[in-house]
Amino acid sequence: MSKAPLAHAVALAAVGVSLSLPNIAHADFIKDSKASLELRNFYMNRDYRQDGSPNPPGVTGKPGEFRSKSEEWAQGFLLRYESGYTDGTVGVGVDALGTLGVKLDSGRGRTGTQLLQVDRETGRAQDSYGDAGVTAKLKASKTILKVGTLAPKLPVLQANDSRLLPQVFQGGQLSSLDIDNLTLDAGQLKRVNYRDSSDYEEMVINGGGRRGIVTTAGLTSDEFNFASGSYKWNDQLTTAYSYGNLDEFYKQHIVNLTHVLPLADKQSLKSDIRYARSTDDGSHSNVDNKAFGAMFTYSLGGHAFGAGYQRMSGDTGFAYVNVTDPFLVNYVQIGDFAAKDEKSWQLRYDYNFAAIGIPGLTFMTRYLNGDDVDRVGGANDGKEWERNMDIGYIVQDGPLKNVGVKWRNATARSNFGNDLDENRLIVSYTVGLW
Image (cartoon, rainbow, N blue to C red; front, side, top):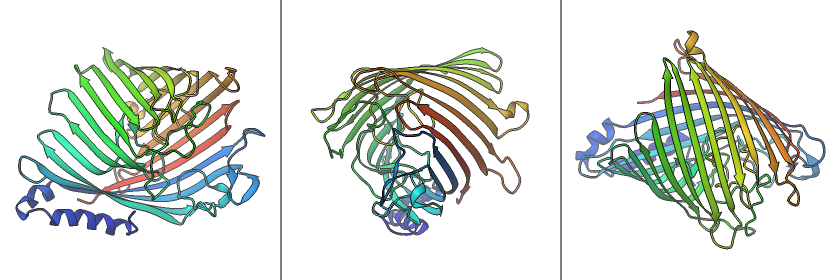
């Protein structure tokens, strides 16, 4: 783990690699390089509304005391550098990422937003945290091999970027676009750096909620293997298959079909159908799940009307690497509606105000309802619902051009988990350095 300041660490990493390349190769390596600094100001409030069981999270160092809310405010800095490639049959390049999170407001009884790194002994948020990572890359034709810091976005593993700093992994990934319309990915991940941490750790399975997933106590994994292929048949139809294996925990196969049907001028119907089969990998877990999901979206000008359905079956709920984004149509701001035997549906509405001459302003609202959750001793009486609302605006011109402001609101209720009211306010700005 690097302890260098943000800009210093990234600059040294990038310059160090570039200087090690032959001078003749510097032209394309430097000419095609780019760097940016993203600023994120993030406020989050999660209010625990239930009385009694299940109890909200406890306060570290204060036995028997529970939080009434988690509330924090922080400033994030993300410095990204991407080089070009050297000349030759195999081009060489380097990427670098430096992150820094700074506490603006927190307290021992208000942690838990995952915006800030928390001291394990005192339970207090640290004043700052961050890391620097480097990725070496090789390119031959349209095939690229990356080794180092990665943030995969594949059906079987999608790195989470919903807080102050992003979740990243250490490993290797091979991506190829050499065959027209076919995208191939394969690789292995060894460690994860969570969004509220500066340490790389071995990976574990997400077993929260009423999933019914049981694993060997204390077991972690240093190996996630994956392979994925996506084929674009035409401008309307794309199909994909992905395989993922968290060693010692589970194996997973996912198939996906996306189709966009043009109906008339500024009208279309999008179908997104997903199926996943997950099983245990040895004797250290009991994973056994089938997950089906379908989302249909009708677009009309600036309006979009969506309806979704998701169903879990098998001996457990849906399995995925902890804190990553599961590839589920009903994974939303707080919940994923992926408990054992759960059936859920969603209604969604989006509006882009550019349709009435206000570019940059967007709105979304949705409601989800789930039931038949295996709650206690096989009794399928678990129920939950969630309501979300997002409104965002990106300044289009003037001195504040490209400044983005987003308010995310959510309400979640269930008879087996925490009842939550949540608000997130995010102000972001990205400036290109070169």
